[in-house]
Length: 115
Image (cartoon, rainbow, N blue to C red; front, side, top):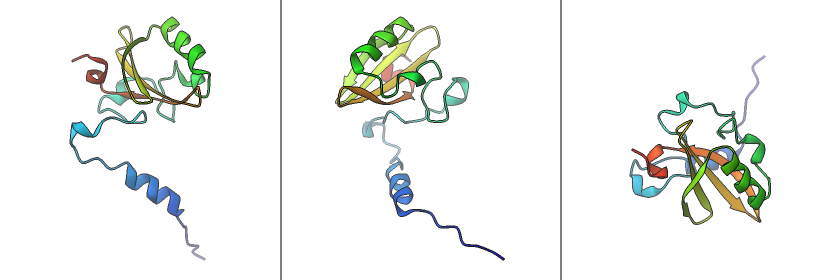
């Protein structure tokens, strides 16, 4: 017997919001996956493996941990902050809300001022 599989409407709405126009001026969300992502160690949620434990950590403590782990602040756009690690060549992004790192992801190196 064949059963129907339904996709929740919320999932469709979220996926629809992930579409890109291809215009770099759109910005890069913290969850963006750059083309070279396969070269970086990330968790299934998209956070660099060495930062995954900082999700939901207090922003002040997490920022200190980012620096202790070799990441340097490069820029901030609203609630999104970009961090560069020269040793791993990872450009990490954090989104802060309510005083905590809500999400951690990666972006292409140029968002961290690299070529």
